[in-house]
Length: 89
Image (cartoon, rainbow, N blue to C red; front, top):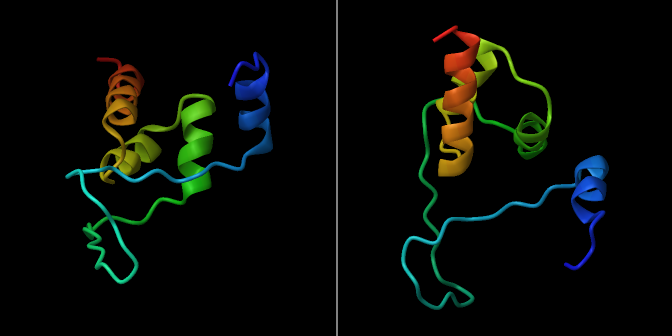
């Protein structure tokens, strides 16, 4: 983006977007079906996930809640480290 202040303004604005994981490369056309994998845990709001990624360390309960959800691999590893630290491991 060639803008040193972009990340700071992006976090401050608290207007995150949503990215989807591509499992198989291909073309998506109007009318194609979409499959959403459900999971049994309480849903996480996009802004809640965004705030947790940039905010202070969360409580053990909140970290466990995040880890019960299908979050991105990089964020999962980060939350697992935070959980170990919070538990004193």
